[in-house]
Image (cartoon, rainbow, N blue to C red; front, side, top):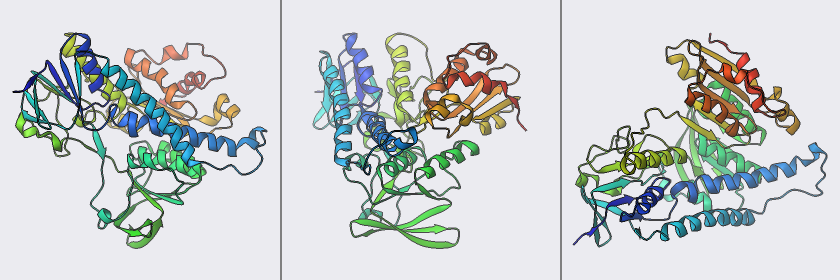
Length: 459
């Protein structure tokens, strides 16, 4: 006989635990199923640990550049990678424990460790047990994609997950992929002291960004010692001692590259295969995502998909917003949806990139009458005072409505400052209101009105 619940949640990423808790707070009987650990990618091998490592890398960078600020540190700055990992583990452990304590304190919530798969549209199997509920929510996330290169199965390679176990300094870290995950690891390990080479099959880093933003990102990482190989594909991978040797192709030229460690950072694959979706009457799209509508409902009544597995967002903040929308719709009787969600994300190199809305390229394709403005961070007093003038600020607006269409701020606190423009976008407030506002000096935000004053028609 199946165990009866009011709701079943498969996966405990950034949507599942919070939705389970909302049901439990309403005294509903809910099952939360997780095969590995609470918190998903973000807490265990994504945001929390990587940003902890970024902070350690920043400390190493600051120590090496201390003399530029009149601070003398005798001797050579070195990094104790075992201590770096221990600090990371402590931060992650505290986050996981806090989440675990909270979930286990809810009396009507059953936390079940195991892999859940559908037996029918209302039934889920976990091991030898069968659970049933009228409402089932999928929050199984995604994992690192690894291409089927010849030799990859016999060669040692790392993903963003297995990188979290590393407690030594790679002599030469080779990274496949110049997108967000790859770029963050490239800079942090270069700052730790590794030789770092990034291989990218396209012509530039962070290819979804505008050319000027991409070029600035490349310059920032090259200043830290990162080397790039663009327009280069990996033809084969082989074990070489304790490391790897890669066969590369650039144009018609074939070369080999050896590394002590090899990180594959080429996107994510949704965790949908093990769900036995066919038994629920569901199927994925060609990329493995579970299609949903703007309210996160699948085509089968009573089943929702949240977070990375639905293909409607690939970030912690979009996953958490999925939870908020589903909770509003299912528990509170509301009508919130993702239809009006503004695309927002960050690239957490140092200095970071904050991105909202459209890029300049996307604005050009929109058919709107668009104005654009850019400003180098060297014009920002706060950046000069900090001795960190790398990067630029950029904004695009609708010339007719005077509303902001998008922005990119690559520079010190750019990931925080960009939220000022985001709030104007969401509130549909004309950018001229910001130009009339007095800001605190010296800050980065105070230069936003100056940036906006430079708006011109795009050529």
